[in-house]
Amino acid sequence: MCIADDGTLRVTDISVDTLVRQGSNRDTLYIPSNWMYKSPEELELGYRTMETDVYSFAVTIYSVYASKPPFPSIRHSYGKSLVYIIDHGHGEGSKPEMMGDDLWEITRMCWAMDPARRPLMAEFNGMLARMCDNSI
Image (cartoon, rainbow, N blue to C red; front, top):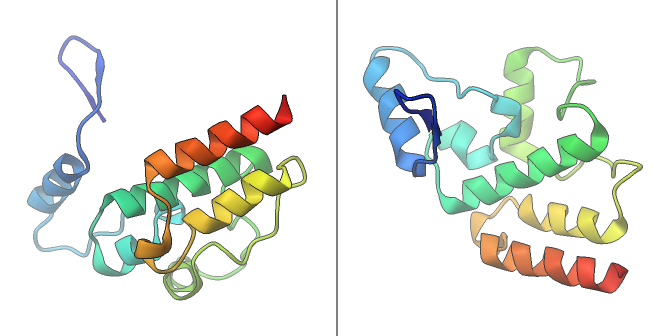
């Protein structure tokens, strides 16, 4: 997202942010902002796709239900936490108390280590809609 000169928020595609960051720091190692919300492949390889967005969205949902960012209790160094996400992803965490079992299962699907196994956002939306319909 970008803020326009008139102060309005503009949604951009995923490539714009990546290009701006790469262009500004060509001689330095780039660690993504909000690294704990990133997918393993984004942290390791530095690229962003719709699958990485699905992964990050699920981490955000987890954080909302847990009322804290992911990994606040890991007592490792910053580097070890990054390596942990790259090697294991977020899927080994425990279900937040306030999160229902159905939403937890959807969240875990979005955390698949293989990006091709993650649902598309349209599928994710459909699962959420069915979940809401069943709860009425």
